[in-house]
Length: 326
Ligand SMILES: Cc1cc2nc3c(=O)[nH]c(=O)nc-3n(C[C@H](O)[C@H](O)[C@H](O)COP(=O)(O)O)c2cc1C
Image 1 (cartoon, rainbow, N blue to C red):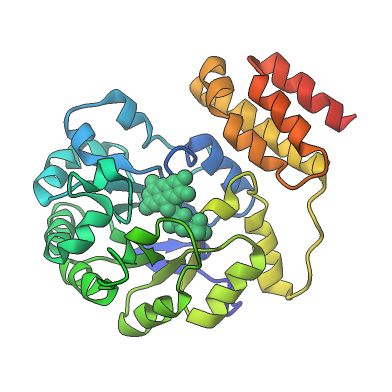
Image 2: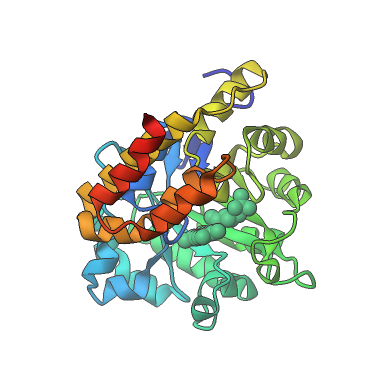
């Protein structure tokens, strides 16, 4: 793969076959969605964020978050915790899941997480990330990676200092969501900061923030020089974004829109996979928001979404979609 924009990424001793990563997305990136994204060209996938504390207390529900999909040869498991001792206690369970990479969440803005000192709160204690990464690199040969924000708020944009501590601990890759914690998910991400990060460190850098179209991905790669991009909200209901980005990076040409029928067939595949992994009842309950997003922006899609919201079982879903496939 010699394309200057679409290429492999080396994380420690692991070669990732491309540079289009699926983000960790709590409530979305379960194994069914990850599997669909891999089928549609994603180079690498992450689990939803997994509580190291819950793992160390032997939580079966938490352990399930780390299971692989059938087509998932590689998997990044993302964990969150506030200090190294929790990481130490969680290690045996994490290792049983045989991750390709262990990623540490230093970006989650949710009050429940930050009030316990985890997620984005770690950005306020950069020395702690060094300790956590060091502990994990001492305990395992699996590459340790770190995902963080540009800072806690606009008055404390400390990503360079933070990354420096992570690297001192032994981190093999840096992923930055170029917004502060106080920005949440709104407004423009500041890609300029990604360029600064890339220019200051030798490990691969993956950029995150505002990747909603293949052109956004190409723009970030070109403008910032990052090694890869992370697809987050832009992949929800839109796994096609991976192959479309590959096509754009290879040809530079405008892409065809995805046909509504293709979207519906993929949504049905997604439903069937989820039912296979989680059982029909759970799948029918949990998948509504994902299925609704497949048809976002399509003419008449509000009526379709209304039906999805009211569907109760697989039969209901199949009937709803059948209309659109006729
Ligand atoms: C619903 C949702 C769930 C998320 N869950 C996680 C998570 O579990 N771990 C994490 O590191 N980031 C999480 N993120 C952040 C994304 O990985 C990504 O960095 C962020 O959405 C910015 O990219 P975007 O602007 O292209 O969506 C989440 C974001 C959203 C919207």
